[in-house]
Image (cartoon, rainbow, N blue to C red):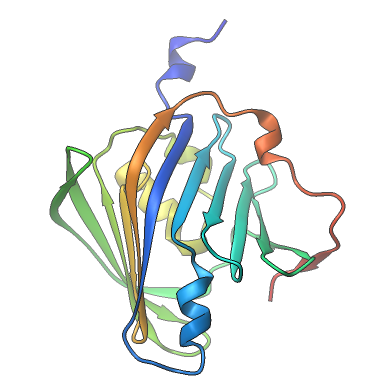
Length: 204
């Protein structure tokens, strides 16, 4: 029997529309337009496992799987027969500024926005991440306190909920993920199964 305590946190799937806008044309523009697809499903498991699955693209990201007990991400790219992995403590960016403000309603929910100004440690380029959220549905942020990647630990502690819109703003491109549907339901354990057939390689 499931307790009321277990029921208070979100388990289910959020479907996002994905929009990619090229701001500066380059040799990589065609690839960037294809890389992030046109939609994404974000699966939230009750034990903290996460799966982001991309649709509408033949190149670029296939899926990103986070296994909470291992604190590890497994990443699969389309047309590449390798499963990449990295520890979620990995952090490639420096946080320059974080601020919060009001945002527009999404799915009839009043939202706030947290904006992160970031700087890549390797190339020195600055970019912005915007997280729009409503605190509904609610997640257990403590499950992600060791996820430095993307400053998820900082974001989830502040929001205690999944984003309803994520906007990544770089010099040459913007990507916007906007929630279209939220389905609260039990997620089968095999959704979060790590592929044991593909060769593995540490993510560069």
